[in-house]
Image (cartoon, rainbow, N blue to C red; front, side, top):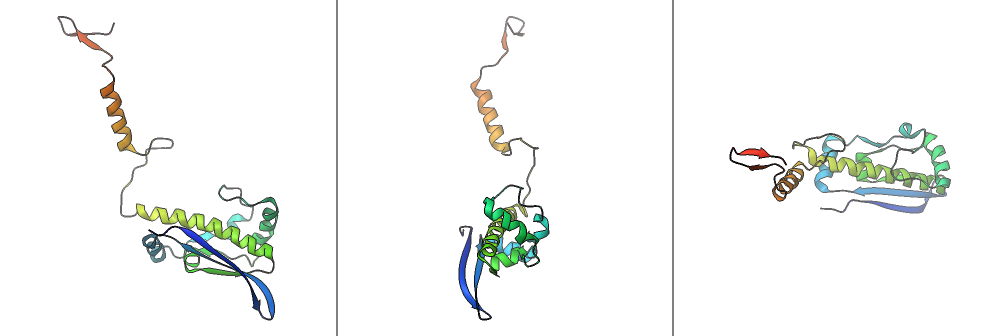
Amino acid sequence: MTTQQLTISKTMRMVHGKLRPIIEVQAQIDPKAKAFLLEHFAGDTLFKRAAYANGFADGGLAASPPLSRMLSNFVKNDACPEITVKTLTAGQKYEGASLWDILCFEFIAKRSFDALCELAASTASFDASSSYLGFGVASDLAAFTADTALEMAAAPASVAVSGIERMADAA
């Protein structure tokens, strides 16, 4: 199995006669999960700027205070790219106008990679059945059943049977 990782490369390149900062990102995930996602869900969005117009307060990787202010402007800008399963696994390049643009894109690429990892983990659940026992309930039913059986075998019966009539004696 391939170690899941996001490769990030930053360079300065000459573009139209001007030196510009460029960042390239590419995700490496399990080949089986990657093939499944690219075949069936290549266009699924991992980052869409409209979803984050009000910020990134939903948990996960958090931006530093200076980056947070810049992200607000970056996400509202029409030049903010969307990231899909296909673009992140194939490699995506972004040319920024400033170093802040590069840092903002790096942040959203990392958030997108987290989303990609969640999708990749979910591919294992296809062609298999699973059970949901409810919120807060132990999800490993077999372990719960085995643990209960061990507890029952180790504890003496709470009600002893005694006497001539073979009646229960709770006292």
